[in-house]
Length: 381
Image (cartoon, rainbow, N blue to C red; front, side, top):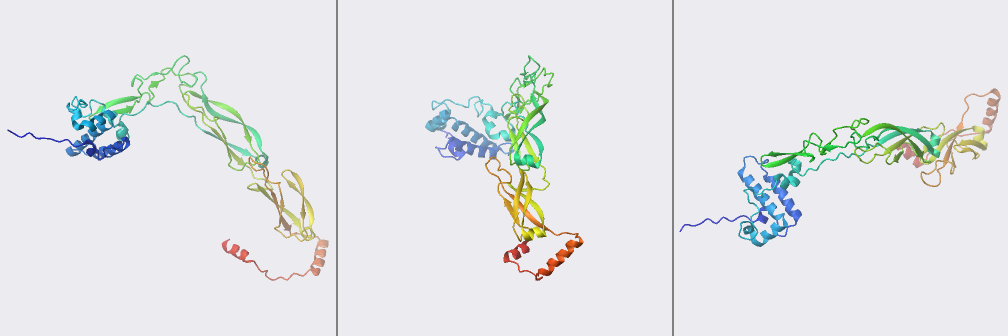
């Protein structure tokens, strides 16, 4: 009596190198790794790799299906050989039971082979954001301003209501892909899906375009909007107006408008955050004797007191005379720097008076000592 060969099929869990209680995600991860490793396109003319690829694909096809996995766990391979009551899911000579191979692998190899799994493209597009550069006077930025601006933007065509088709018409099903948005091709072992070139994957075309927008769904128009500049804005501040950009295509959402502010410099004042700085010259007698000065602020005239013996560079602070805090209460300060001005031309009488003053004042013209802080500051300047 001749012996009969007993061929034992490798356990599906061993094929995928996973435990019997592996989760769906663990199965998928293991299969993806093995399928990428043994795929025929990566291993041309390698029969062993092709067999491994078929084996791991068969194992995953069974274990990824809850019903088939339950039958396999109970009866093993016999469940699919007609002896376990489960029937043979691979009838028809294909290890994939007649399924579309592209559908089986689309989730795993879509990026490599552009197979299946592609969805119909949508014509819907969000409208483009717009930018408008607005120039402000210094005072307008400090106190705020309302200004009307006019922009050119794409708006939904009223004649076709954004459909792109002539009045009373509508987009029709693409005759090339029959509305699927894809064209399928059989390339050897795989079924490959490609975007339909006629409808760009949308599944429909405009056969009778609108005369006003020529099928583009939008037309360019001028639009006026009131820009409210809050008090205290700075250079390059952006104000966003939601939905004031260009209209979307085929019902897509509208973009936004960004107003970017450019603030002109002031003739006298410089801004540092919410504080203002300015320089006021005074004469030597004013510095020596002290005085009261009327200066101009952004909100009108104000009086400052210059104390006796003021040196050049002294700063006098006027609280609350600066820039309003943006979207908050309160203001910054105005900081006035005093500069003692030395006259360049003197009359004869002025010269005589200064000579008399000089005779009454003695100053030791030797280098003055400097603080440690000043020395360090000079080193790093």
